[in-house]
Image (cartoon, protein in one colour):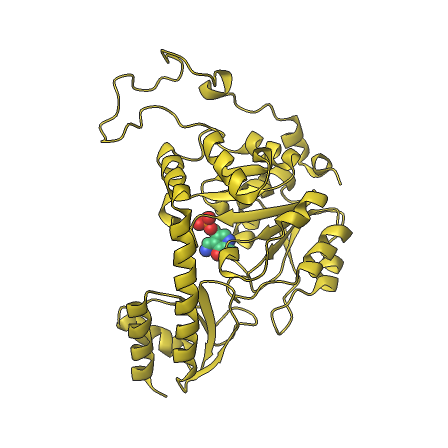
Length: 348
Ligand code: PMP
């Protein structure tokens, strides 16, 4: 597999923008090359300089955590940016296609639509497992991307690693494994699988376990040739200085993240047992993520009742295979208690 052979021809030919920080990346006394405000910025912390376009320090830290070469790491403005860049790098509008496994994260399809890429659907089985034969059958020589979300949003379960590996081995396409929720799962990452299979891209985000959704930081781990292509197409300064600094500080506090994950797992277990004693809750699906998917008797009415009480959950009841389902993020102990009280009040 040579990822460069799958690239959109115009991207292969593209001469990327060369920023001031590309042309000079060493240390200097005086910077008069980027038309910044030489006098400073009106903020407490200084932001008058453009950030490192390749986030080298942050990548070094992430490389240490993941035991992965920094050249195999891309950092984006959320993992949503990486999803869009993968389409722009690999998919020829109006010609190429991608395969998704619904019900799954909605942005794969929206990004495909924005980029005018056909979406082929290989739905999960009734018990939300990958249908590997269907994924393989749906793909053809114009399939450039296959999206597998594990643990999956909105179903919450992890996908079988052997199925993911088999799909990666059988297809000459980029297999994007979205591990946004992996920190809440007992299942290990496919990053180690990726090392022998250069067509696997692993997406991660700082928005979930790391508690930094507002900063907008996501990563893609992949073969260095794929990372080089993402870097070629990304906006030059796609991750702000503020985001880079805060992420570095967060990494120093990694123990706090581990502790929050442990607490969220306890809260998830407790929320599940509270919800299971409510008669109108029909099914609570297994979850390896920081949310629960549940089937209730009157989803629309329950949703409206909760929102009238100021509690917003996600109505997934019109999503295929999720009929009647609500997706509920694990809250704080107090938030979960209020949710449960409101659901009991709804009755029926
Ligand atoms: N992947 C999945 C599966 C998600 O659920 C989300 C956010 N809900 C994202 C990616 C996007 O994350 P980010 O905030 O990093 O753009």
